[in-house]
Length: 105
Picture 1 (tube, helix red, strand yellow):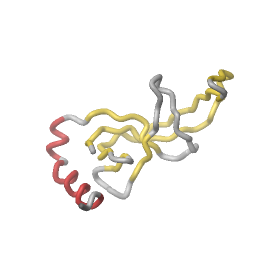
Picture 2 (cartoon, helix red, strand yellow):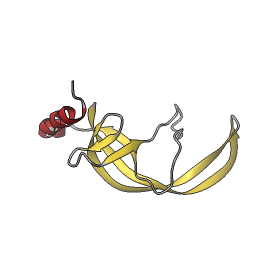
Picture 3 (cartoon, one colour):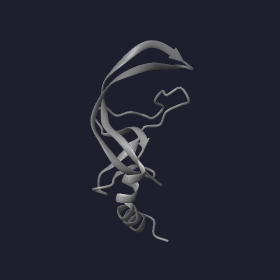
Picture 4 (cartoon, one colour):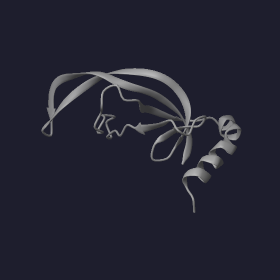
C-alpha cells in the first residue's frame, strides 16, 4: 500500500487501428483526464480525502498497452506516479486511518 499521485479520467470513443496481434484487434481510445489527485493504492486507487471514491487501476503489458477490459465513460486510475515525501508526511495520519478501516487484523 502506497501513497501515489494518480491521474483520474475515462476513455471515450474506441477506434480500431486495423492491426491484429495474437488474434486480437488493437484499438485506440480517446483519453479524457479529469483530475490529478493523491490516492492510497491498494487493490484500487482510493482518494486520500474521501475513502468512498475508489478507482479501478488500468492494467498494462510490458509495452504500455492496456490489457484490462475497458468500459467507456467509467472513471479509472489512468497513470500513477510516486508522491513526494512532504505529501507522505502530511497524509501519514490519513493512511493509518485507511489501513485501520480496511485491513482489520
